[in-house]
Amino acid sequence: MPALKWMQGIGRTGCGAPRRVLVAGCGTGVEAFVLRRQLPKAEIVAVDFSPRSIAVARKLERMAKVGRPITFQVADLTDAKLPQKIGKDFDLITCHGVLSYIPEPARALRALATCLAMGGALYLGVNGAGHPTTTLRPWLKSFGIDVSEMKEERRLRTLLQLWDALHDDDLGELSTMPTSYLAGDVCGAFFNNGSLAYWRTQVRRSGWDLAGTAILPPALRLVMEGGRERPLFPAKPGEVAVRLDAVRPTGFHRMMLRRVGSVERAQSWTGLYTVKYAGQTVRFFSATLGVRFEDKLTAPQLAALKLLVTKKGAPQGWEKFWTRSEAGRRMWWRWAGLGVVAA
Image (cartoon, rainbow, N blue to C red):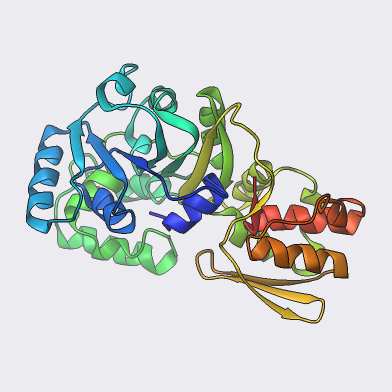
């Protein structure tokens, strides 16, 4: 799961803490418990297709005494009547590592769209084209490993150690993972391992807009040296992310989505960066994103930025400090891609 601060900053810019949260595909409740600690006053509803998982989640909740009760329910995310069963008007919906294993993810996305409150956002975590299963499954099969029924054996661990030595996946060291994880998340029966372009298409067809993706800030920062990002300008952040993912496919996408037709909000400070000033040079650092960079601002830009950072608003017509020059427009475009500001 990405940080709640990132979900709020990119998906619900300028909004307060969510009042109602839906965990779509909660499994045994770990994600819901984490959100409960972070949002002690919110109403949290957590649903899963598996009655067994929900039973375990309820038992763990009783044992853990996590605070305000979480509503655990059995529900099918692809059910068009989902909002009638679990309620509507959720400010934040999280769906992490679920739709990659559903044959028709668009059905679930459409159902979730009907559960969202005005101004709400959906965090979606799904497998990317760079996910290990894309190449790991056929590679293990070439050694005679039955990937349809993963069993613990020394030969499997030896092969996974070789795999780990040649890969730096964001899923970690596969050779250390339990067999249950390998059987379900790496060598299961069905996968949607898609590029960001694929998932963006699924999202758009289901009534959603891509507000931001966690892969964009570090990837954009990587290409910024010497102005190498200029061929990407002035594409919107979603298109930039798609282009960069096509070059270096990620293993797992973390996206923030908003409903198509959501009320447009003015660009706001996301709160993801700390800022240090050295004359007219401004240094930005985000521990959440792992990104550091600096820009040189004009005096009017510097004054407007200080007001944005302190959340005291900005002077009327402040956009002109960036939009009246090509260099300023490019700077603002970079800031949007890096997650400094968002709509």
